[in-house]
Amino acid sequence: MSLGRKYWVAVKRAVFLPSNDSNSKESTAIQKVKRATSDRTGKLDKPVPLVTPTRLELLVSLAVVLCDYEKAIDSSKLTYMPSKMLLHVFSEEQQPLNDSSCELTHQSALDFVTTLASALELDGECIVFAVVILERVSRHTLKQLMTQYYWRKTMITVFTLACKLWYDESTWLVDVKTCLERYNIFVSRLHRQEAVLLKLINFNTTMSPTTYASYVFPMLSVRLRPEAQLLVDQSNAKTVKDSSTEQAWSCSTRA
Image 1 (cartoon, helix red, strand yellow):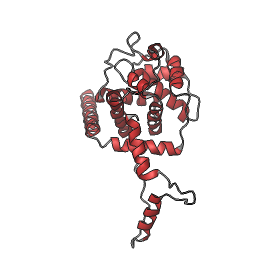
Image 2: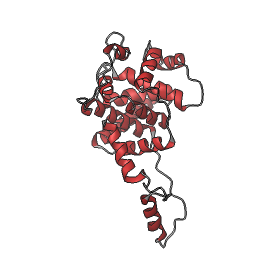
Image 3: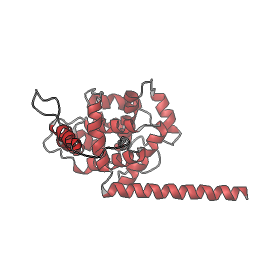
Image 4: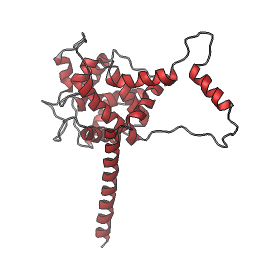
C-alpha cells in the first residue's frame, strides 16, 4: 500500500465505511451520532459550517506528500516496472524547465506547486484531484517519478490533466504552455507527457464525490504535521516580508 493511500484507508475505516448488513441503510457511525445528538437538551441556533481548507493548506499538504512518496514507497514486491524510455519524457536532464534547482525538498516542492497553481489558476479541488491521479500510478513508477530530475515535469502533467478533467471547459495544451511561460517555465513535450501519464494510470480519469471526500479529509490531517506547520509559518512570514517591502518601495517612489 502506498504512503498516501494509508491515510485514505484509515479515514474510511474510521468514519465512512458503511455497514456490511444489507438490511441496514445507515452505518453504525451515523447511528451513534444520531443517538448522541438526540440525547442533547440544547439546540444550535445556527448550522455549523464545514471547515473548508484554503489553497495554501492543500498545497502544503501536497508538498509534504510528494516528499513522502520519494522517501517511503516500498517497491521490493512489485512486478510491473515500466521502461526507462517510457519515463524519459519526464526527465529534465536534457531539457530542463528553467535555471532553478530541481531538487525535491519540502520547500522546493511547495514553491513549485504554488507557482503552478498560480499560473494555471487552480482551485482546491484540482489539487485534491492531483493527489488522486498520483495515487493511481503504480508505486514503483511513482517512486521513480518522485526523483530529482522527474518530479517537476510529472507535477506539471498531473495538474494539466486535473484541469482538463475538473473544469467544464476545453483546456488546450498550448494555453497551458503559455501560462507557464509567464512564470519562466518552459515545457516542450507536454502532449507526450500527458499520453504517458494516461497510460500509467490505465486511463482511469474519473473521480466520484466519495473518492474526493476520502482524499480531502486525510489531506487536512497532513497539514497538522510539524513539517507542514513549518512550511505554513515560513510562507506567512515570506508574505509579510514581501508586503512590507512593497509598501516601503511605494513610499520611496512617492517621495
